[in-house]
Amino acid sequence: MVYIDEILILNFIIDYILLLTTSKILKIQTKKYRLFLSCLIGELSLITLFISLNNILLLIIKLITCALMILISFGYNDIKTVIKNIIYFYIINFFLGGSLYYFKIEALIKYEYYLLLIPLIIHIYEYFTYNLKNIFSLKYKVTVYLNNGKILYLNGFMDTGNNLIEPYNNRKVIIINKKLNENFYLVPYKTIDNSSLIKCFNPKKVYIDGIGERNDISIGIIDKKFIGYNCLLNYKLLEE
Image (cartoon, rainbow, N blue to C red):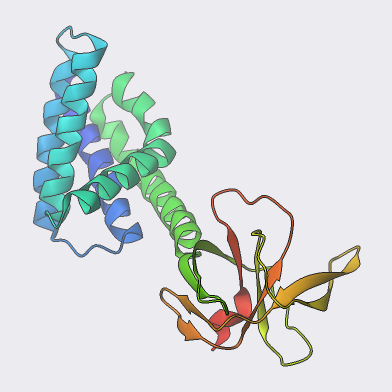
């Protein structure tokens, strides 16, 4: 038999961890009382466990509840920010909440035993917070000012394996996969099992969100498809 108080307590704990994780990853400063109030709103979604609803209505109720929780937790700046916060919340929900959702719905033991799971839940929370934060913090918006006056807007990923320095002017090499008409020169590079040359050019300047304007960058061109980004940044950019 599943008791209502068991479900309420576990649901509250999970919602609090999910909201706290979201705030940490997105670096949103919020008050604990706002998170607690949001979790109380999240308890309303449990009504759907006890009434029969079609899938569309169930989805609408869950989306509205989620939006209210995000607004209460983090406030309102603009609709774009709210949507972004909701998307991140669902991503974290997928990673962290998926395994815990089973216990919330299929609970067959007293909630006193759930208290024994709190250290494990906190450990899972810290693990995913650390790893997701690292993944998201390695992404940067990159603006490249070309010599012909054009501007490239790129999604950059800080590649810990890219420490390539061109040997002529000691410029840090970032890599993109776009075809451009520039004055190229060849830069030697090595991988674990290969040595080759990469076509590079020097742009007017490069601006990287969170790092600033750089005039010491060379851009390498490769014919390779990236997934989720179109610019591999040089890890040495973080050393200065």
